[in-house]
Length: 195
Image (tube, rainbow, N blue to C red; front, side, top):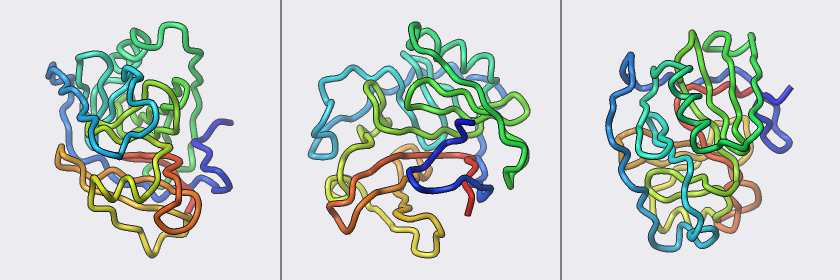
């Protein structure tokens, strides 16, 4: 079962609730991700195929906030990942209730009741946040661009969060010690982690 494996970390239910959103796609045009500074030293030349926000995702130019219908999100994802093998999984034991997951390579989309509620992104080509952050950078690089807070009371090693430009919070996990620790993954919305 591919339940959002975090290197050496078990999954559980300490889920952040989604921060609102709309019942249907907003139809907004997605802003181009800001790729600047030292926060994206690797893969800056790669064209983003998936851009994630603190409050949703976008594929191509269509931005889809949390609460967008699963069928709409998956159809849009398949337009930018036409050759990708996708995986579907579920976990009935999440603290926020049963969840289903669809993974396109390093990006996992989280669904409840047929609606997008969160995402989890590992390092891979074409993956970036709306502000140009990608897994694979160091915490020092991330701190040079954003105000990062380590989650001191977390039972999961290396957990951190930062305020994203779209008004929400993006979390993540870093492997290693101090500022040289590498950002292994990022997430937002409702996830299913064992805590």
